Image 1 (tube, rainbow, N blue to C red):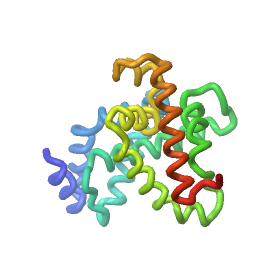
Image 2 (image 1 turned 135 degrees about the horizontal axis):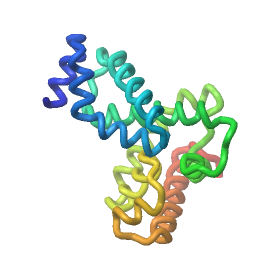
Image 3 (image 1 turned 180 degrees about the vertical axis):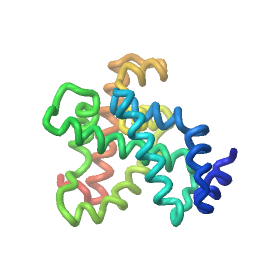
Image 4 (image 1 turned 30 degrees about the horizontal axis):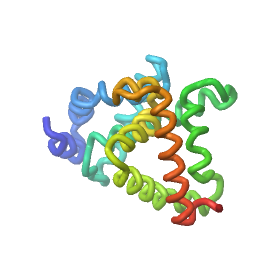
Length: 187
């Protein structure tokens, strides 16, 4: 079934929309959640939460690219679930490592003003990634969206772990420079 047809099922409030979503994107969403949660039961619950969230936001939302839309929802819910269960056990995991790497580039989101500017920041980061050379974009998205470890990225792109690490450092420096230019970080 095409994405547009699935979205129409949501607009008609037809429960087949969830079945079709699971059939078409269940494995994709499960792989996103699994990279973050690393627990089969948590992944299943995350998928259930994803489908419920999609059901609740369509309508009125009409996603332009359904795959990205549902992937982002899954990712955000998986991160929320991860944070909830690991809040007291920081350190040692891949998620903490990924978040710590970006911490120097992305401003903390602890006050109301920064929360209001989150959409603008997201837009800047999306534009930043779109303008990266393809290989750098694949490295950045693999690491910071899909939370892949460095060795998986290296294997997928035919790079050494050291080359991936160096590339990530350079990309983060570029992002930091861009955010300084946009006024999101103090120099």
